[in-house]
Image (cartoon, rainbow, N blue to C red; front, side, top):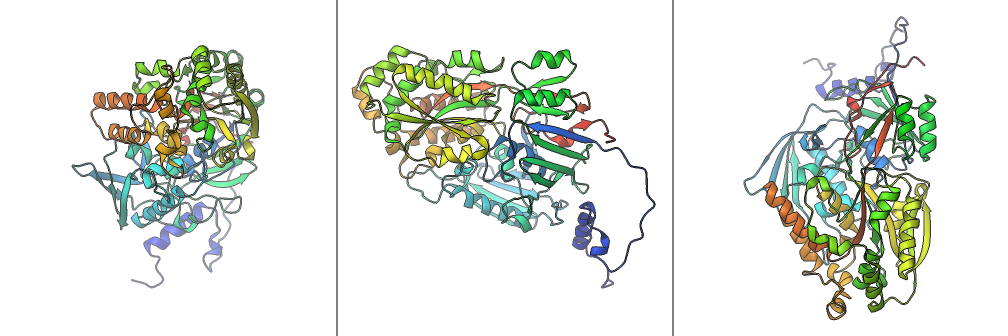
Length: 566
């Protein structure tokens, strides 16, 4: 073979550089003659407004919905969600085989895939990414740890349960992952952006305006500035090439301003339609698309706070909040009162849960009298200057919840934090003085584990024994008034029960076991579920197709827009 010939790897790199717009004169000694100027081809550009700025381009360290939405266009996992069902299907793994005992997954990694920087995909690259995921699982006080805790465990194993992934190794195009227990949700979890694979050359770089995140997805990132992100289609994409040329994400925190910008033709679509905007949009001929209620809003407890370790206080708070009134008065039509942490579409409800979460002011007062609470101020964190898929107006939700708690006898101290100032990290790294926080998210993949993993992650992150941190007053509850609920099992045993439910493939039994485990979880009052909220997207007529997903991680490779000449 001629020594001057290009190897297959070099040819792939050269093709990628051409796609990235790097002139060939920078790669060779031969000058290139300018081509005759051709007529400008109208671009197909989707201008989409997020309800919050993209403050991170790394789903490995941020659970922000906007981070996930943007990175879902750039990064891909071993599996990808089906556009219609959300169920996992082949992604960067071309296929896989599962051992009879459900513990060993052998993935065939695609070898015809190129990262946006020209690097090639192989099993060794997947292992490098898994190494990073494992390291992130041990990072303290990270809002994204929930993505990795159940997979890889933590650096402090005291009181922790065995991680799902026991080992992984890769060579060539074969990746072998051994699990510690069977898991129905494993393949679906791999499809979320947090498990998207990054180029090995950029794996250790924290994404920034100068060092943009590099993946294999249908779009590559070309700019990120002050929460706005620009993506361009990747010409060498291994899958179906996008029909649109560019996506321009902007951040508009006000629902009224998002509406105004759409009607003025300055954007083509936006997320989280305001409650009062549906009728005007319909009258003006705009499209509004509503997602299934797949976003959870809830009140979290900081169990590092000694007072919040008192089960009687947590129960009293739960019965003090009229969640039905909050949902009907604040949330969009179609939202439902959350009775536990598993969305209704999974049909895993337990009728017994109603008595655990019912609005009962008298019961709340009785429990509060028996508790250790003596009127101490309780810091309540909530986000401002943001609209979330789980709640359009967090400040209003906070005011209503805090009002209910105050009327029940709690001394609530407001702690507002701007979303752009790092609300999620502030919640996770808060001192023991923090008692409560308002939280919410949209499930990143189609499985109950997407919700339970996020809600329970702060508990698994507790240093030491989970049961010790949460059970100190469960004993007193057993000897107190009959209004108090005493869990039938330790929280760590409930975790094991949830994992056992995740191992069952038969759908009927799967649902029954999850419903039972969910009831046992609710007996510990680890958080207060408020609502499963619907969210909506508004689109101009310039948008010809838009692939809606319950998760909000809409695959824009399948979106279509009319050409734009200016």
